[in-house]
Length: 274
Ligand SMILES: *[C@@H]1O[C@H](CO)[C@@H](O)[C@H](O)[C@H]1NC(C)=O
Image: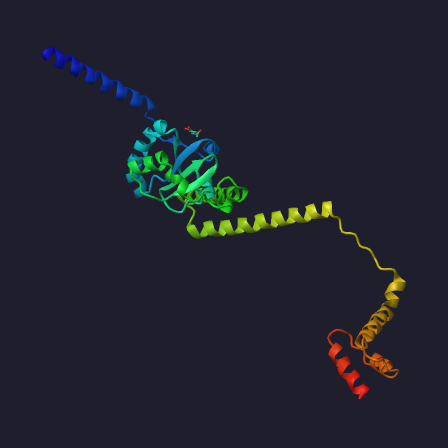
């Protein structure tokens, strides 16, 4: 009896050890995703967390995410994590406005997951394919689109300028107002240089040519106007019987701008007819 119990105990121990060792083999920390290698998430199925070290909600969520990541192998997905402070390009691309933000990615289709956040909930999202109920992000907010790439670049630029600013104030001790003055001047200078480059480019590729009017055309210009005006007078007579007197009458009072005085001409015409 004791021997049987002993064997049973050893067997159980063996199974438990095997199970835990196998599990620890699969145990993986969340995969770090960066500005540089984020395109890897376009292949296969992913769950992505956007977090920042300073955000309290992220800190309490870290343990859940780590645990969820250990299930990644069984669920046949990759579990990733993005630190937005180090990857501003991605926080722009994914338009991350709250932390932690979760995304489900399947074959390049992005869905923002806003549901319950316990490990079991997250497992159910994948295991029971609950993610399929979520609408994918609209095309204009698609992280792999050109416009979101541009937004990402803007976020990166903003982060860069913020870095420069904090270096100026913290390392070089430049007062805040002077930083603003320097940034203002730099903005103007950069604007001027870009404007100048644009003008030079335009001049180079589309050189402006001055084509003078032939002198005789210039001299005839007033008479040309006259001809145009006569056309207009004919228009006012359209559909009416033109009287011999009214045409010269109207011609005398030709306005500089025939269109604005069109009604005037008409009134005059009516008077003449009466
Ligand atoms: C991205 O790069 C980081 C570090 O450079 C690496 O740890 C991570 O595994 C990479 N992620 C992917 C998805 O390739």
